[in-house]
Image (tube, rainbow, N blue to C red; front, top):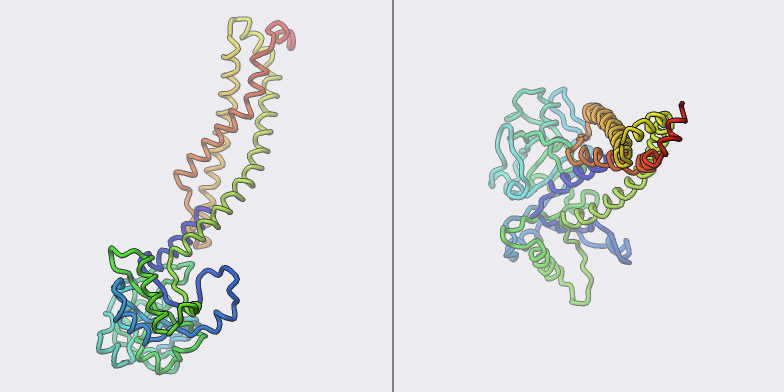
Length: 372
């Protein structure tokens, strides 16, 4: 479960872009003694700042200004799609965000600059409005405005970070700014920058920081009134979080292993007691102590491995049920299978050693008399 959660979170973080830097009002990770009200007083990034960054930054390949309004209803004739996200983007959005279109095309530069009422729909919105028929060329109504559909995004699936486009209506910024206040804290606009190949993320972040401080006329002693965010900040935080979860899992699993180990030891003690007469006969016929020891150790290990395999089979069935019923991908990996079998074998060795050792040290005469 922890591995599946970590994989899902990491894949969602990766969808933000490993060579993408965000200029925002709020940081992704809060720390230190910086008071929250100072974050609140920060100005929002602007379209003008995006253009200035594009002119000055040498380490940046492309920039996009983006903002989103959630919880909107999209209409086409008698069909409605609720809780859609209307996303306002500048023209170079396609140079930063990786996506595919199942039909139609992206905005032309003329459409972006002139603010034409055109839009590209996410797959879920298009399916809900047009029921598998072509959406291109038809109109939708959202935010009390009519827009022409020029394209449909390919289905991307759910993302924990909310970066998927399936439930999104994307419109050009010069059209969107006429119906949405892009200077509102409610929509929290941001500037997204794609770093050039061969340039380090840290260098690009430092360059953007330097230019933003210049644009906002901050003195050397002044604190930043913006945040430079990147996916590595979340990745490092995720690593520490899941390291803690791993330790918690080891502790919880350790109690289960402890109980299981005592159970195996009890079973082997009972087995030794019931077969004491047989052990005496084996020893009288020349069986060495190590043979008796290995015989019971082998039985303990086999018993644990069988239990481990049964447990793995139950877990595999549960992964299938959870994956299909809860829409949460849960995979039993080869690493976890190998680890489970190795731990089972190790518990067999540890728990079975004392009973096996006691069996190997039995006096043959006394052992034969036990059931004689």
